[in-house]
Image (cartoon, rainbow, N blue to C red; front, side):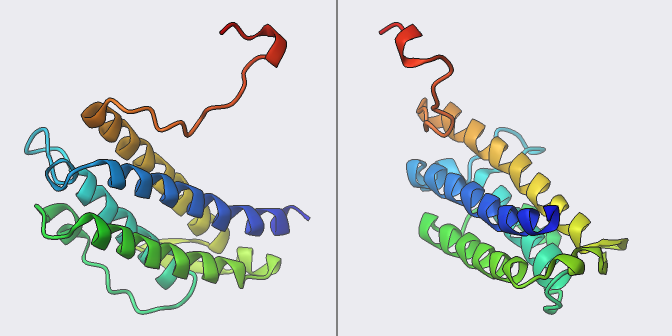
Length: 168
């Protein structure tokens, strides 16, 4: 059943993406984490706060019925104040709660209605939104970390050709 496959995939994908964000955080200094290239841009730190708020609201509140405690504007207003460890802990906690919530769902619950940020949708749509949103910002964080560190994180190292066809 495709629903069961999705319910197994979704938390695993969120854990994978969060691990990539944590790897990037570990390579950056505090100044780099909170660096903004312009007044209209967000820092890696802002994106991590934003991801935490989004996941908590869409999965914790929208799917898991936790209180909606999100203050979205503060995610982007922050200019520092949290260390690498604190950002990783915040994101780790939110992801652990969200993945636990998803793992408790039964396939038929994916069609259950949810109302989040004024949107009326299904639990399935809420989870898809979170994965898509998290993936998008993870890409931004990876790109920023690569620019600042000139490091290849190896997240996508896989053989594109058979071993015999590769040149050294």
